[in-house]
View (cartoon, rainbow, N blue to C red):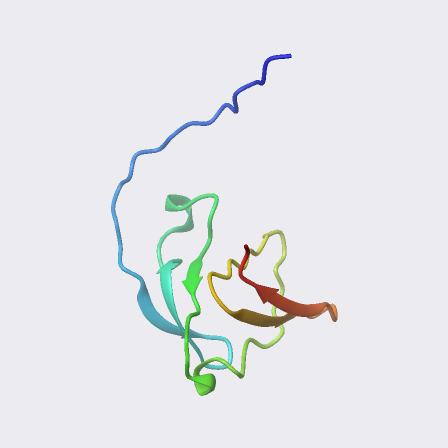
Length: 98
């Protein structure tokens, strides 16, 4: 049986932007590639943050409890590991793929 092609549409690039340094949560230093703009411009995405940091004081306090109602979060680890836990008690170590 022949494979059906996904019905995808391509959108043109409207602009490029550099990630901006900002702080979130309890003082986590990060670079936000997008998330300051009108969300309708970036649909289906809401934010895209780069958390790379070698200074523990800039990330160890993390993020206080906050809901993720109706949105899916994705953590993409390029190198090393990230300790993660959520408000439901789930926790684990996330690492870079093969």
